[in-house]
Length: 115
Length: 112
Image (tube, rainbow over all chains, first blue to last red; front, top):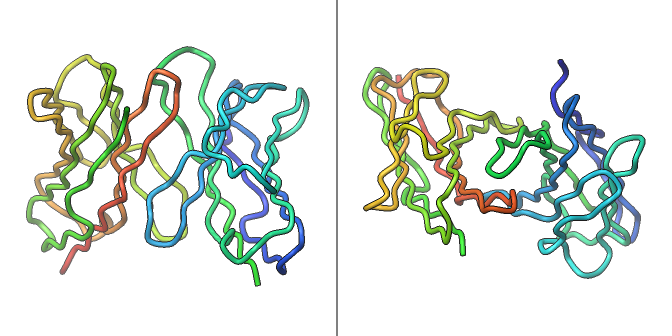
């Protein structure tokens, strides 16, 4: 049973380009979460999605960032017109659809570097 | 509101000695609490989880944590440190809407 998969593992973009980060949840999991980890900090919640629905996007920056989790395929975190401050590790987690307080299982992360 | 405070940003122990990583939480609900470990440039691995069953929770690799409601604490302990335990440890509280709140992390160094 494969764990949470993220790709790419490393992504380099120049300022102004777009970054697309992909996350495939564990088999049987229908809840996906995205977190951002800045250097020397803990993870900060960005967005919580279920299939075709955004449940909570209270941690997403208001501009340039968007996320989706389509009926088929991986969840995508999209960052438009990247800036140097977007350089961070982005982690995806998934959990089963069974209730409150579920364990979230984390992927290996995508490390974004903006030049 | 939920929040987590990890009292030590760095802890250094000698191999074979006990480990104590401190965590205090604030929660408006009856919380779910977790400890995760992150090795350099890797993802997060679940060590253990508390969800209102036994207050002493045993996890993987010999780690355990005790939930103390009166002290709002969830400290992580291990009787004897191993070199492979060197990593960063995160205490996490979950709210009733599945949102995780992370502490700022404690980096554990294990000296030979």
